[in-house]
Each structure stands twice: as structure tokens, then as C-alpha cells.
Length: 245
Length: 310
Image 1 (tube, helix red, strand yellow):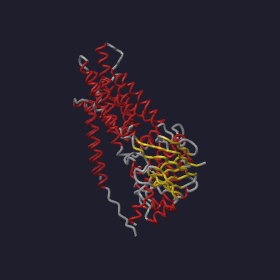
Image 2 (image 1 turned 90 degrees about the horizontal axis):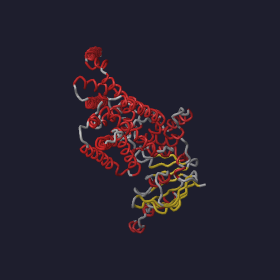
Image 3 (image 1 turned 45 degrees about the horizontal axis):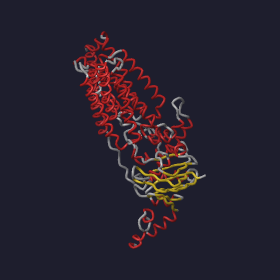
């Protein structure tokens, strides 16, 4: 069974069409890089996969279920900069939020969950910051904390929205190291603008620009080599590039 | 260091002596109005401390302001029904509850479905509620003592019914927050994560706004519609300076509100000032003082050494 199956998906916001005729199949255990220009619909695609937006047409199945019913199977890493820096929440509380559905006011937080949270915090090098306010962390540390939160409930699907944008190389390196460890165990969709990383590490690249087209990293390398990388990905006429070459 | 400690002790002793001489504390023993007022402020502090914390961290102070002002519409309408049409059972407080709930739910619905125009809609509800109130007040003959009480607070005239309503609200708030604490924390911090984890975000947000609405109606008894936003936001904003946990924020905020209310009540009794405004002013001055002290402390901290890469 494919982890994600999208067929004939159309989505428009108010009168603007954002995604058209998207057909996509992602197999369990694949590591996919999602690239595309700003406004191309990358984040919209992620939101559709999580069931936050309803498509105008077409179907989405996550592990055979519609998105609204498969939310617990998804770990989501948003961009750290969009959170309120002054919100009173500690890193440990934030990480525990990753398994909110397992927590209840009527019983204590399970010890095993606390241990998993502590182990993830340690693995991501956040032990010294565990009791600090999330808003006081640097961009790299905050992004690592969000990754720990997404991994806490051990979901089979991981969606990451530009986790390495604007963060320091050591943090980005650590995030990729952990994603490599998850390879084959989880289905990973990584939205990124860093094409070099995408080509080096992922199994397949999906370019989202109005619609979604799938490439192998090797094909992207060939485009790079020809100086054509922008052309087919961004829907520009290829002959323009040919002439200037 | 020793000298500082001595000075502090002398100051504290002086304050103690002055307090003992103050009329407020003597009056508190034998004045039932003041005793009731004190109980009302203490009960109000729990509601405002807990709900105020949510209002501040979720950054919906503007929604609070809008609810508190739109109450006037419901109040005015009920008063008009009572006085002009002789329908006795429509108590103005019923109108206040209804207006606060309607405006809270409309704003909640707008937030959940049309985020882009949220601030404008809040402003529209704010002014529409006030406008309806003003029109009905002008249509209602006689002196509107109830309305004045609602506008400026009537802590010295708190009835035992108000006290039991406040106590009931406190109980409901504490119970709901105890049950839904983690879910409310997730809702306020990150709605998307809450949704992913199966939290019914829409229902929980409307529940939170309803609690805000009820708290505002009851807090207006203490401090009045115009100033209620002070009690709902200032203590929690001040408490944010001291903690990085929402649960502790609520406790600090409720304690601070209780301090401001008691201090404001005492000062208003001594100076013969209106209690609501005195409570507001003491909260605002304390917040500014805390902010200044925090800034000074931060400035005094030495910069950490810069480690250059090899």
C-alpha cells in the first residue's frame, strides 16, 4: 500500500488556482524532497495532506485513509520562526505536545513517554535547554525541538516544512543525520529550497509549481549540468536557456 | 549589604506601623460592604488570573476589549425592556451574558474561518455593541444606576448573588482548565499541532472564548466595563516577566490580581477615589515598575564572551 496517494487534485484559494491536476504516489519508506518556487503550493500541499485544507476536486489517501482520519499518523515540523517568541512554554512541554493524544488530565504522563521525550531531547542536543522557554532558543535549537516533538509519537509519516532554512550548519547537519536514520523506517516529505541537499540525500524529488512533477535526483543533476535546472522545474521555456548557454 | 538590610527593615517596620494606623484595615473589621468587596475581589482574581493568562498568551486582548464593550448593547436592551415595556424578569445581567456570548462566538467563528479580516470584525463588534447600548440607554427614561455600575464597577455594592455567581464561575474555570490544560496549552501555542493530535480545536476555542465572555461579565461587577481589560491583561502580562510556564503564569497572575484589588480597594477607601480606577492604576504602575526593574537587571548582566572559531 502506498503511504500517500493523490489523484486528480485541484485546490484554489478564493479565486486563485494554487494546485491543478496533481497526481502523486509516495511509497512507504521513501524519502522525498519537495522543491518549487515560493507560492508554488508546497505548503498548501502539506496542509492538504494533513487535512487542514479541503481540496476542490480529487482525492487524497494517507495510508489508505482520508487525511482527517490519518492525522495521528503524521509528524509535522513547521518553521520555527512563525511561533510566538514570548509564549510561556518550556522545551520539554513542547516536545510532550507531540503525543498530546496519549495524554490525559485524569492520569499522570506515562513514564515511558517521558523517557522517550528525554531520549529525543538528548539525541538532538537539547538537554541543557530542556527547561528553558522555547522562545529563547536560537533558530537552529528551536527547529531541533520541533523535530523532537514530531518524532515523539513515532508517526509513520514525517512532513517537514523547510526545516533547514535560515539555521546554522551544525543544526542542519544534525537534522539531516536524524532524517537519514529514519530512512526506510518512515515516509519523509521534506520541503526545501536547498537543491544541493535535496539531490544528495533524497530518493526522489517532487517539484510543486501549480502541479506536481516527479524527478529522480539523477535527472535533476543532468538538468544542473546543462544549466537547465530552472527551466523545466519552474515551467519556463527551455529554448531561452538554450540560446543563452 | 548590611546597611541595605537595616534600611529595608526600618522601611518595612514603618510600612507596618502606617498600615496598622490606616482606616481601611480598621473599617474592614466592622464594615460589611468592605468585607463583601474584599471577597468579590479575591474571587474575581481567580477568574481573571486564569482566564487573563489565556487572553495574554493567545494574544486575544483585543477580543476581550470588544466583548467587554459589546456587553453594553445587551445591558441597554434589557434595561429598555424592563423600564419601557415592563418585562420585569429580563435582568440587565442576562442581557450582558447574552451579548458577551454572541459577540465571543461571532469573533471565534471569524477567527476559525476568515482569519484575514479578524481585526476589522472585532472592531465592528466593539463599536456596534456600544452603539446599540447607547441608543437603548437614550430611549430608556430615568437614571440608569445599573448602567453606571456596569461602566465603572460597583465593588462596594456587590450582592451575595454576585458573590455566588463569581464563586460558581471560578469553580467551573478551575475544573475545565484542570481537565483541558494540555489541550488548551496546545490550542494557544500551535493550533495546527493541536489539530494533528486530534484536539477538537474549533469547539475548544469557542469554549475558551465563552469562558472569557463569562469572566468579563462578572469582572465588570468589580471594576466596570471600561476598565475590565486592565484586570484581564495587566497582571498576566506582568506575570510573563517571571515565568516560562503557563500553569505558574496563572498562579502568579491570580496572586498579583488579588494584591492589586486589595491594595486598590484600600487606597480608594483612604483617598476617597473610585475603586475600579484605583485598582487599574495600581496594576498599571506596578507593571511599569516591574518592567523597568527587569530591564535594569538585563542591562546589568555582563555580555557573554564571544568564542571565535579556530
